[in-house]
Length: 431
Image 1 (cartoon, rainbow, N blue to C red):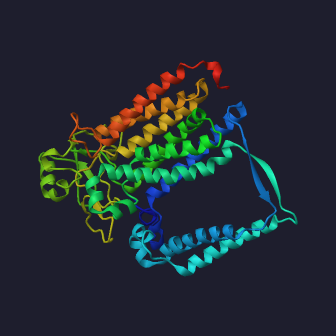
Image 2: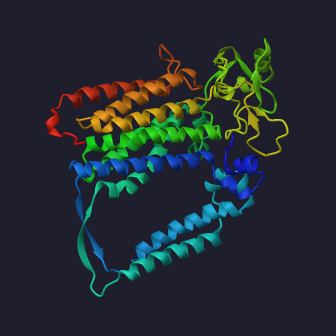
Image 3: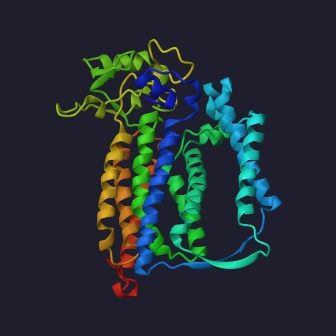
């Protein structure tokens, strides 16, 4: 596993650049997922604009004025924070050991903060000064929906992260009570559906206020949401963030994390030898550890059904032999089903389906309804082999994701029925 860029460069190229620890694998793929979603949204907005379903709004702007003190201050503060924290983290030795804690601490580089802040304020002043005229004037400009994708992406990122943290802490309330600040500040522990729900409300409010029709908005976003989830799950797999499956008792891993077929009695012995880990909250009691035995067919690699997640970002499991790092030196002695890998494959296929059929849907909103149904079905079934906190006070002991998955499926069906009853001529799609 590669919890950050340092581990990837070390294993693949044999170089050890300490500053690369600041670039976390999960965050990198999350950023890629937002880029992919933004790109597909731009393409769909432009298509709908050409069809006449989405129009522009006019806004007044004042041109010809020099940069205001407020604009210069905002640019300076943004640059200062970047230099103080990000560049400070790259240059500080203690930050390289635990970048996340450093980012949320009061530590930073004052020098780099002032330099980058000054540069950004200077660039803003220079840009506005080039456009300065003797007599500033107000002009009306047309803003199309695709012009707002940058703002939409920022809103989705902020509220998505917030929602993911809120739902994760609701799902793991005991951890939150024991360490509220640590739970909120940590980049690990993100619940996808929490982010999806809160970001959906925030983005919908923003777009509707700016004249973007809700049903065309959700249809335009549907393919991007699916591919963003697929790419985000690559980050989960590469970083080893704990969103993996239950134990595959057909295999066992040695102290170097190498996986092989288990011999009779080895699984029980491994559970006993590592009882401190398997008695933890991740697996409850030894008697209730979830596992299935499945041997990979000869035509696929064994890691596709049994992976030990060495160097996982959460340091879950037991210590790797000959690992001299201060962190990320753990592996799973009994390998698990790599469910993030499965979800990446399935959701990539579902994205292609949505992308290929999107022009065939004649009633706005029905494509998004299909997305909800497909996404809910996919996540519901993968939950059957995932390690997750369960609600024991309900009759069938579901996980949070199972409940939300069922809700998405039902919502998708209701939306499909409700939208399909509308006449096609009300707002037809044009191929």
